[in-house]
Length: 187
Length: 202
Image 1 (cartoon, one colour):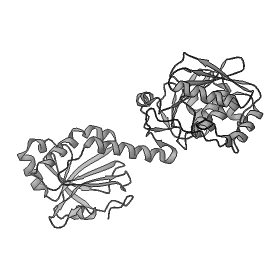
Image 2: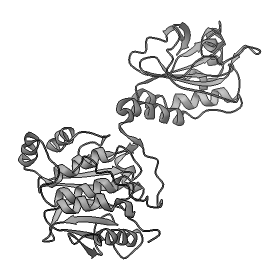
Image 3: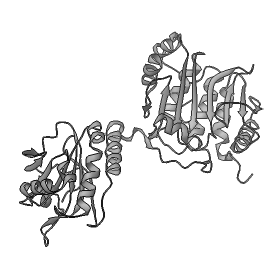
Image 4: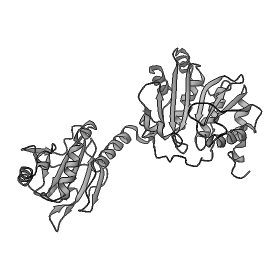
């Protein structure tokens, strides 16, 4: 089970990336954040939309020191076929993991064992390779890259500042709090 | 009085502060007659009614209203101000600001004091807080202490509930946040040495 703070599984996976095949060692984070966007299958409708959305924000993810992968249980060769057939997919600038063995989806517990496809899951790993975010949403709902980016930036902020700050969750015009006073040892 | 700003249970601690104040302080409430300024004025009036060492001065004009500025007995600004209403946990910081501006105040390591007094350029500190924030006083109190020890340094506290635009302008995604001069925003509680490092660079 991919509980929060658990280490990323020691897996090397194959990916299709801009016309070439690559080996990706998930543990080799190179000090960067990692986002893995699982989706059910190539050649579907919602998937290209959100994969393209992720692609359009790629510069911002790079600026946030975050590497990005998509992943499905299709093979890298199906990814290639999809890219050859679909301009949106051909333009993707991040690696598309081909999890044909389903080892990655199974390791993160996002595999629909009955269908043999990954659920629509988003995994966020910190620069040490620990799980800091884990979400699965219903298969027909696309995800928002801006929201994933916001979460990465917030996680990085918390990582840097720890419990030394409070989230700025304020409400304009909120009623004034009654004062509290604690001067013990301060005068 | 039900609904009043100051709870009677705080009177003992407040009297301890008042008894240690060496000089009177004037609380100047800017924007006192409108909106939240009226609420601020009433709150400060309640505080001033508890001692002869505090007096109240209403004012209409000012920047980022409502605001209460801490003035010395001659009406000169001590460099401390609170934009908003210093309720919640910020009331402790506010009272310590008054205490520090009124005399010897809280003890400061001599080496630190020497560094503060040696700063020869003006520095405006703005600290963004939330009144319910537990850690905010841990930045506000040292920042205010520095400002009370050098007339070239000011420290203004902003309750972001009333100044969300400033928080957006500065990119404050958390509190406390310190804007010292034109330096990038710094977040989090910090000891006086760390605040001083920033002020010296500002």
